[in-house]
Length: 371
Image (cartoon, rainbow, N blue to C red; front, top):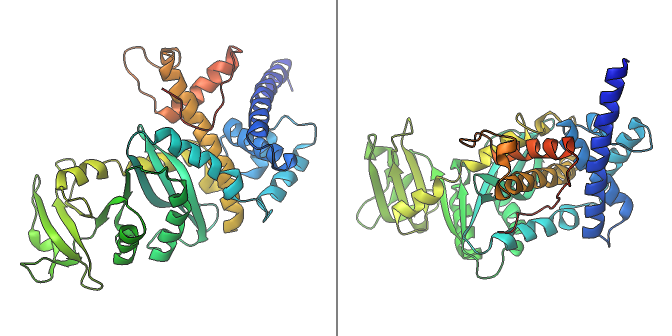
């Protein structure tokens, strides 16, 4: 190894050491009642994911500036993700609840969607919209491929979120066409006070007081059209409701969208539904544009669920850094002066690099910035 490469390696390890110490000390303060060895390992995993941009235990362990050899760090991480006593209820839910408390002064917009993780598994994730991103709150990981999961699984992940919601909060739940089952929508209506807007399919049969059962496709919508069925029963298979059913062809879309909601105003439902796509940015940040969690070699759902604890905490911190750069009016140090081209996630990563390069203090928090 050349002297230049050796110096670069030492400098990089020095940066990783700073990140590791900061994360470890912060987590220890946040989790004083938990086994400190588990907390230290969680800090290692967060640092490995952020510094290595890979949510794979081997590459993660290579980024941890620890006295042990890399393979012993990897074994430590493997024990952590395999430990049945470690769960999101202790190691993540307190952070999720803090996120919601910090956002409770505005409507809480929840988005639910699934994405492949690891080998042969899906993660069903619920997050809260924050600016143009979605911050994760809860998830279920199960064996399977992208496609329709049973309504019981949707209800199960929402049951994890429901106790975290601050009292008196207004909640809007958004979902794509996988979450439009009568069972799912009835659960939201009967078990919560939330509003919901879900995409549905053109071949779904609905009926109103004045019309028999008909397929939404019979509306024959054209670009720019908006049509509604008020007080509609949804669907013929199991009549739930009454709900508002909307057919909407926005000029930006190649085809019409059909929505079902318990809002009474179509424009309000459309306004909120436009925010649903923001969970796609979370998935891309966790995958191809960020941590590559879809390439994890883990195939056990429980182990992947624990890996997500580290990946989601890493994500929240990076978003925190991105917002901090904006709020302190220093974004022009890492982005263009005339406009902002970076997402909050990319801005957070660059801001971290900037702080390390210039040996500036590292702010750390697993929440949204105040103000």
